Length: 348
Figure 1 (cartoon, rainbow, N blue to C red):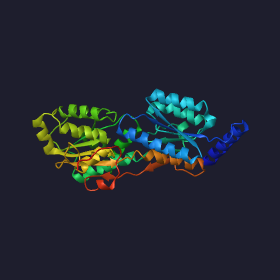
Figure 2 (figure 1 turned 90 degrees about the vertical axis):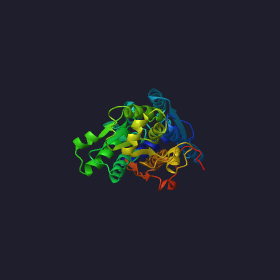
Figure 3 (figure 1 turned 180 degrees about the vertical axis):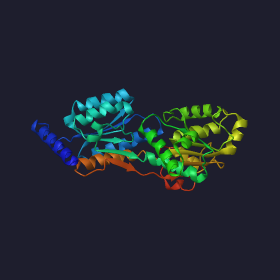
Figure 4 (figure 1 turned 45 degrees about the horizontal axis):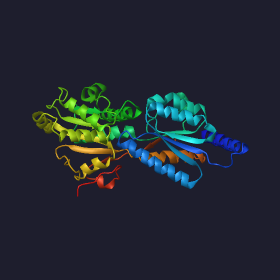
């Protein structure tokens, strides 16, 4: 029923355009993403441009990429688009952060079909109108990380330092998946809270991740008498940890004790540089042999699938509103089977 209503709306808009004498120019699919503030969003931007170019070449719709420098900029971009809503076929948007809720509700109120990608903002108004929420399995990232930790020997006497990305829905889901796995394996809420400690938000930044790790390492929280596990929400954060461990900023005697009980470092996305570490082909960092290192996939090329979902919906196909793309665990044994993003010259 929902797809029929959207199709009817679009047909009416198309007829109005012809009646006003504008000819048969194609309506626009707007693809809206944050500008490149770290490796993953930079890759999203590149893949989004590829998809926009392909749509324009095909010719059924026009397409344009909008890269927002901050929350206010993305809000303004949407407002500008909605001022000419009759020219829009639809919007595919990666919301900058949760500050976009009222803006997404404006899109819904304007009856413009829209797809949310990656970050999902929910409200009654948004949920009633959004075509689909297309995202990688963020809960799956957390779940698979906890599962791997348990397989590696995680116990209720250990310490897990969880280094989160930001305060959006993405880290919330990754945290939830991690805790759900522990719960399924007999951990109580109290036991989870006593073992798993969150960092402040890293902003998905390698440098901020490194600073937070070094601060934690130098504190009493980093108890080297316990088995230690680090669950990072992104490859960039994990690279910051690896660089710090290979640098000169940490106390050497404590670092020796740390390595004796350090069990695993997890990451997520598919950054070419961390894949080089897993292959032992990084220019400066050797692949660790004393602890488990792995990354769970979260492919930035999923933005192309989000735009495909919009096109299918506009063609009248029924779409699952909760559209989740599965994840895989990548380690030194299977890394050659996966395609990373970003450029990195591997050591030969």
